[in-house]
Length: 156
Image (tube, rainbow, N blue to C red):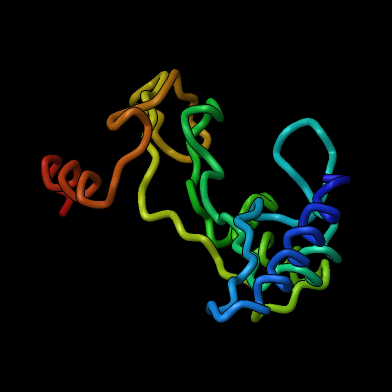
């Protein structure tokens, strides 16, 4: 993170140089973690938000992959809001705005897929259920696969 500011500044400078050509101008964007101020791993860190604010044209928070087979418990893959946790898209987007990023620069990344788990106890299938590994589709299902599974179970 400490060198991110320098990297963005260098890339921005190079893009400014390219404007002297007859080609259309290029945009500098970045796909970033859903939150500007914390990460889900044990290493405390945050983005140096002043650099993305200054040097990026768009910032794309990845508002997905909050839960999956790696997390050992079930939960929403891309929760818009979760009153019990900061791991949700509303919190993440607000953290970028609080860090000084103008909302017009934020492009929310969406998940167009679902997550699946093999459950330790199939009778316990709610949020927070313990899993023992990835479920159907190696833990990831596209929309048409979710629809197919629901149709097979008579739920659609």
